[in-house]
Image (cartoon, rainbow, N blue to C red; front, side):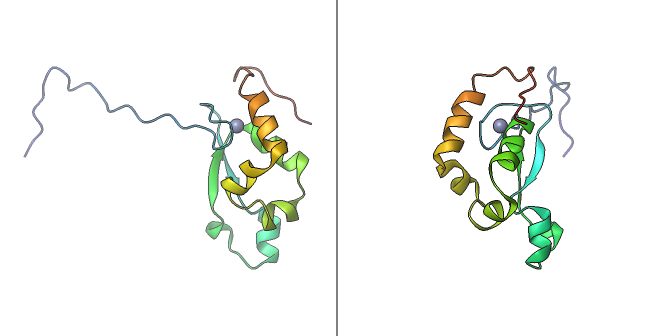
Length: 108
Ligand SMILES: [Zn+2]
């Protein structure tokens, strides 16, 4: 059955905004964060396409790679829950949530 062209036919369902899994901010430039760093996945025989990814803003991703080693990320922090359970991550998230998305957050 053809959809009736009503006066609202121009209206597209809005997509839910994508937000960073850590800080929950909407960001125009979210990136796919590999929960297991690619180099570690290779070492463990995991194919790149099988590594789960989550949407993360550049600030949070930069923070993780600066704060934790690849093996910590691969072995202990390979789920969002595990990452958010870290006290230092919670502190960072609280802080970064107050930063405007337009301001580049320098973590390096
Ligand atoms: Zn974030």
